[in-house]
Image 1 (tube, one colour):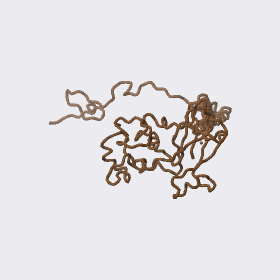
Image 2 (cartoon, helix red, strand yellow):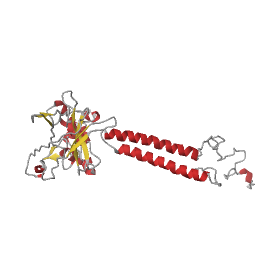
Image 3 (tube, helix red, strand yellow):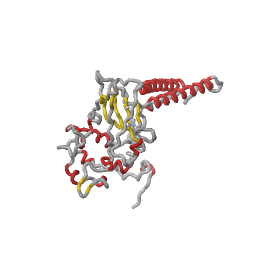
Image 4 (cartoon, rainbow, N blue to C red):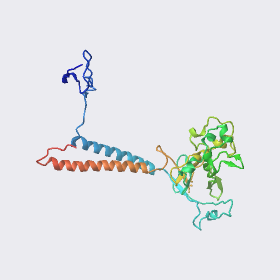
Length: 319
């Protein structure tokens, strides 16, 4: 059977339509979206709009950075190193493995009084809590109070998973290496009398870490206070939160402000806080640096604009 072919029968490169059929087309619908007729706005960046933006951003960042930097510098902080590497240090004997336990006393005087509550930290150097195997060496099921995790600890806890076929709780290298130095403060009176400075053990951990859901009773004793025992012991909670860098500090105690005691207080660190937290000048320096760079770019673009605007070839610059 013979058929006549007509180029008009083929629509948009497709096969010819059957006689009497509906024409098929791949042409998009005639809508604003499919035909790309939606209204659009494209900013034209000229020197008159870019330069003020650079200057405004620079001034805002510099102002915020100066405020944060000044606030950080107003925080009182003192650091006492009791490593004992110097032979003249009273803690030098603690380096000897034959001295157990080692008790050393360091006398210090604060040149400025600490206002408000004082936070006491301990600091460690060259201790890599961010090591991959160290970070994984824990059992979150135990920390969440899962009863089955106490009988069968996670295999990631090896070699601190079992002791003579008895499960270890809490298991893992993190719990096994918990910081166990005891730090005490005494205020020296006029007659060389030592008055203990009260140190608050509770309130140093985040409340979100302090309240596991399945706990029935403590597994072991870390403190004589019944509300600060076992896995909910705040020293243990603070230690389990691993640090990102090998040199770090962790909150150890809180010295509350009292009317009858003005703390003239202490690698042990004593520090106050502000609305932005502890002493950390990096954030203020970062804001000042970014603001200065933005302001400097604004000055450079202003000079370039002034140079080319006065040229006979160009009346303005488009960036």
